[in-house]
Image (cartoon, rainbow, N blue to C red; front, side, top):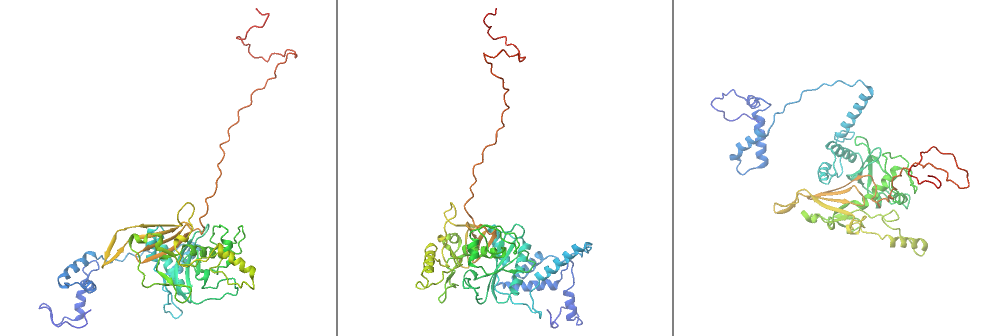
Length: 469
């Protein structure tokens, strides 16, 4: 921007030329919304951004490139559409517009200032990686999910991290699931329940049927509910308050069953690259290893390059066995020791080979690479643009996709565990049509008198009886 009058002008220019008139001349429209002032601004901005070694010689090349790649900014004509006459339709449109504006606007507090947002991954980038794994969201659905997660994170106090967990498919409506970690530990009054922030309740979950609507907080998972959820297979309907009718009996509604299935799926399917996390020096949790280097190329397409990173859920519905005094409670101690032998505790960072195979497969996981698998060297560092896809065979719908230093874990399915294929007995053959009954005739008897003729024709080929010529 010109801030003062130039020291000299060309001979054609008179002393009466001012800065305002010079700017007006530079901003003169030359057709199609183009003017010299904006063109020079774009050229200088590109030169300053790229900092070429020979800026003086490449100035014309930059100018020509901007002219060829710029397009006229013509505004579309306003289209005035008539308002619908149906009051119900008008009410739905107004509701949708209000929800959309509320979703896409920046979350703000009562004073109008922007609310802080916790650690939230870029779901738009994650969706692009998931497309290579066969998990596709439409652009509209992806953008709405990203905006809805941002609003959920801004409106939830004490939230440290938040991510899109997945989508549970239902018979009537689907569930979008968000996973977050809230600061602090909320102690439970029931000693049998693991406190929020620990064990199976380390993470908190929210669900919604529509990303334009508010998210609903799911309750903590109870051990008795997890034990019951393991014994049943139930399709979700999309109604959190729907009663669960099953055998064995489930002690709760669909809200509790959904929370238990999320805990079971997360425990078995949430993975991370092997070596990315390490046990904490002080504590029982895990922490990120800042010196970790991501594998490149085909090294990533191996099951031994991945590990679990969530607590293993034991047969008692918890992540740990309770401590019992063997002298004070010998019977209970014997029961717990028997459970430990049947299902010993496992490390958080357990390898994938500890998972039992599914069906006739040799493993519980499927690992492959898609895309450009050729290795490249960028700035003396090896890199690859291939996408590594890891799928769970035990929980169909659980997918982990990784590209470079980014990886994403998501679940999209019915929330059902893969089981033994059902047995279908061989069906019997088609029922054949019965033949018509034969005409029955009484057998002749020598002691009975000769019966009258039945009117049938005489057999000419029959041999003659005795006494007949």
